[in-house]
Image 1 (cartoon, one colour):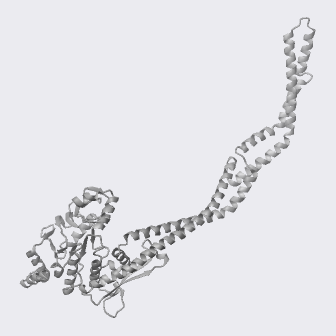
Image 2 (cartoon, rainbow, N blue to C red):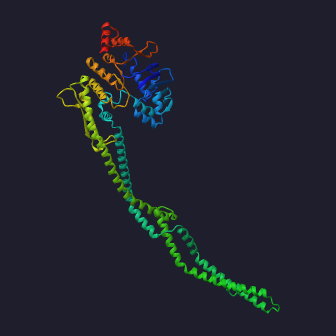
Length: 552
């Protein structure tokens, strides 16, 4: 529960420290004194929206600190564990939430002097305090709040988590299936072209580096005629009448006539003649081979033309055709695999939907069962709140599949009839403002044993009612205080008289007005409740009436 609230430089508040206890605590005071400012300050401390307008004039920053005593709060234990905070330390020393709002617009949050994010602060605050709550009288008009009320009453948190996970898994499965289906459709449109292209490429059967080899061969073959001419000329120089062979033979004949024998020279000349003859034969053979490659040149030209034509068609360099063939082959393989994968994804969609439906149906059955329990629990509270002729109904219907969500497939709506014989209808059409406030209290009473939030704050929940009804509201608030800490801002003397603790909020008469909070003793409470009864001038009759209200 909330034990202390320390406020510095917040709107009209210069410096204010308040302590709180269990049970029902009343906050009263004149209109404009700053009662709602206290709630705004507390809201900031537990993660509410920060605004530089909240900082007191001429001050650089506003600081609000809220201290809590924590006992038996399993949900909070789990939350603190997630952010690596030792709950034992918190349980022993208390939990202190602090918010610093600076004039330049920055905002800082702390947990026991440890820096935390504002979102983390908000998460903790939602587990500790409900300021007017998401289930206030206005919120009762929203069917979404009705579902939250029922789920809180039925303690559906674990089941809701499972349902939400199953729904998201189903949604993801559907998205994956639709994406794959679209991708496959686009691929299928391309498949015919890919298959045709692959056939072309496979028929041509291009090898890596083939074009370069063919180009070199073509260059060689293109110069064949010139090469043959040059080779024949070389043969002529070797074997002709005036060629090297003839010259060497003549030299050998002259040497044979020399009286002096020179064997080394003769042998060298003989070897040269033999090598020249071998060269002659080799050149002749090469010339014949070149002449036979003219048909090969034509084949090379045709092959090169086919390769380069296909390369232009596919918009790639010729050297990439072999690589392209493999790419197309892989792409076609993927398309075929995707077809099989699509069947698997479709099956997964069916299974994930069935999984969601199973848990959502389980949740729906529980909601219907606990809806009757809640209906009975609220109905039993209504007479005490002077709504004894009212009928409260929890309506649970199935939504269209298009409206299924992480909360299942139920539509929950609270209906009420305030007069016997009238059919129950929507709250906003049937119940008045005062009736909705009392219905809120009845719902709160029904949730008293299941709501994990230890501190509830009501801001003028008694607005629009008076007399006996106000007294009934006060009694129910007091009763709620047996299970939870209740803080109520009120203008009703009947409600104020039933408080276990009482703070009077006032405003100083200084040039720069300040909000002041005063904890009232018994006699001071008589004066304040008397003021609430009679106005600015407190009469003896008002004091007597105040004492009587306090004794009831």
